[in-house]
Length: 624
Image 1 (cartoon, helix red, strand yellow):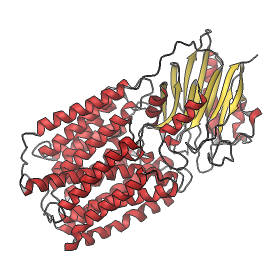
Image 2 (image 1 turned 135 degrees about the vertical axis):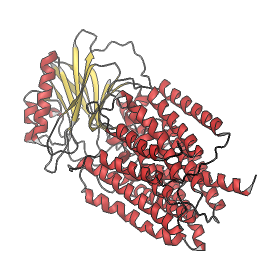
Image 3 (image 1 turned 60 degrees about the vertical axis):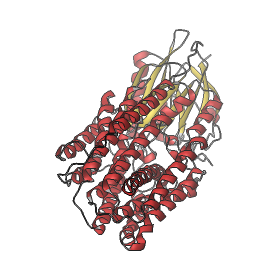
Image 4 (image 1 turned 90 degrees about the horizontal axis):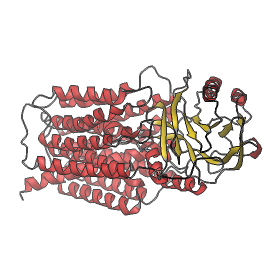
């Protein structure tokens, strides 16, 4: 094996492992500073922005530090720091330890990216490595149901981390003397590519985030095929000789993947533009890798500007989720895509040589990804039961905060354990995440459904990947997602209703909701709008009804009065009944309301910190 070939492979594998860990770091860092450093929706957004910038702005120093001869050690040092931080996270760090370990991991990963740009790692090899990282992340999300490395069990998490660490550190050691002369475009596009992939193309939960059960199995397979084809496109050197098609395509595909809505839910065809984006992102990087030669300082500055601007756009994208601003949220994602398109346009006219083994590698990758998808699809069905549905019925309502515990760790197993221990027939969930990068990019509903083997139904609120859900031992009928348009509230509230057919011939309507706050608290109009929806459901079917959810109001609040005029407070005899915060609860924010003809008993609030709320469990029967 020639030294040039060996160096090429070292560069590719190190770039793949480094960007894989960097994307994984972001999926820990973002939810850590919105759940541990502060609280999303409560802590001022300016505080989050300043805290984030404190870890990013100093990274500009990586440019001059990597330029001298002794700067050859900076990529290895930054990689070692990132690996050490990941080891701490993998070992179970939580609370402040998790927050700062994830900050260090993300900051070190970005410093590594700037350093390898300055040192001049071969752009083509690096672009292939980035494509491999995105395909590996997609494969991992398919195989685990969207659980990233840090939150996986020890038997899988440690081997994956160890392999990535060996490839990264070994590659950085092998490339320590590299002083290349590549262009700057790839490095400007690298961080935008990782963020765009984290937002859309690697987020498999988007393809499962429909309203009805079961989810479409083919969506994940399609995205897997796109990611594998992306590795082929990067190896090939792009799509066609001219990069204009690629630059336009990444903008158009991003628009369709992020702007498309059917009401507020993603349409069933959303997997197609997502899969195409998984293919186009690596192709765009391959074009950018062929830019004209630039000096080391310019390469480093390009990498730094790319990461700084793309992270700021990501922050703005999520600030718009909590704050009413005049710029539509998808515009920020389109600007990230535009940064990549501009980088692709700097390509030279020269073509890259395609190795003959490329097609074989692509086909093998496709087969692995499709097999993983088939395995996931086969394991998502609920357990069948022949027990007829009849009252009494045990219901659990729970704000799961995207599956993130009170200590900031993502742990769907802990949530499933709490739910399973209370043996509910129906589970009403709020703050359900289907792939929101700000909270880690996990599909918390699919993960709980797989663990509990229940039928799952979902309704988005103001964001297609964030809303309410119902898990049931039996299938529901007449499932209806509802939105509650409230002026002045950025995070628009929603609700989900479904009808449970009882064995005695009667029906029961179930409704779950989550009231959202403005700067002045929950608007009274939200409760009024919900009351109108409840009255509509009750009058339409003449069925008894149970409403549960997080109302962000205490029992004495007068804003609940319109709802109490049509439903009874099911928890009134059990108070005091504190549900928030879960470690030392002092407030009741979670409720159960019921219509005439029903009675409630066996009310309990299990002690757990699996979320920042405690669940409420109750048994319902016909009133006697």
